[in-house]
Image (cartoon, rainbow, N blue to C red; front, side):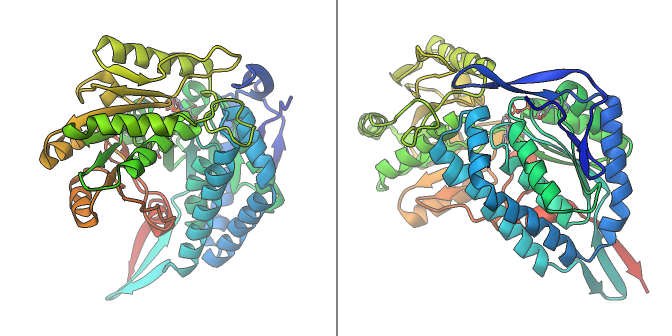
Length: 467
Ligand code: NAD
């Protein structure tokens, strides 16, 4: 059991709070650790630590800041196996996904951001002005559990490179990866106070930190519901806010494209990580007269999917992160049936220890149904038919979200459709994300962009000195 889980002033600290939260392994349902629920005094101390380190860090040469961040990256690479094992235990992500995505993505994106920062002009001359880009001050980073390493990386890397100091509040459900990352950051030898971490609940510790008068930026990744409440709060104190929120992203299959690829691209995002991925392509849109063929392709793809213990090498689908999350997913499945959608595959809880739900596919889905509009955050795919490309685009855009999307079809046509989808990212055919390209949402999926130079720019104050 690890009980002292606060880090500020460059060292681990004894908590003022005596309250704890248990961390549960979702595969075994066993308590594997407990972490402090920081109180106001703990949070005040962490913010004070970040505040006192700001001036020196902000005026340090950007290349020197990049050298420190690079040391964190080296530590992540060295302790990759421990990070993977921790995520498998606390989140139930499969070992395949922990390796190929959870850690690899963090390493690739962090390397790309450091590279971009080293080439970035932190000062430039504009006519008679010197324009300076520098940190805001203290950035509070509030992160979700689904990518317990990379969601923190996507915030602290640009914030630190831009000259800010940070206080991280990781999720209660999966805080152990954040604690391991803190050990790595401690070993990287950053000046004391530049990085700080407090564990605790969202409604108490998170709420207090995001209201703190000495905090300049709220950087939040999580649900749209909490994001909206933080937006209102930031407005009152004119804090800068970066929001990365939920999604209900479409995958459009166009006639003449590779249907197997379209099914794989959508299905993989709802199978890996049990569909607990904000950018998952959860709505598969296919031409009406290709529905029967699509059903066969889906059944064929799902027949070999292994669901089980996430630490086993060939497991693709593990448990949902918590009992609550499992209940939420099962409730959505019931709602889908009630509203008239038809189950093609799965639809039930799996009878074994752990929070397992069968990979599930619905057909006969209307885009107005709850399961087509709301984010389920589970291994559930819905198939929706369309009669014309215009209708496909209309259905794709008929969502309060706008995070991601996919189009599979003849390339020129697919790109033309991608341009009309109102989301921050669209993957065309087998196009892969680049770690230097921006990631972020339109509409209620948030605002601000992560990764590369785009990520850096969210964390700058900009000053003009006229001569
Ligand atoms: P959540 O909103 O419940 O919690 C996210 C974080 O906010 C946690 O650390 C939580 O403790 C904290 N929090 C909760 N209430 C708070 C409050 N009142 N004040 C301050 N902090 C508070 O989300 P979750 O269940 O952890 O994550 C799942 C959600 O995150 C999904 O909606 C998913 O789409 C979204 N997400 C978005 C992205 C993206 O990049 N757009 C990435 C991953 C996850």
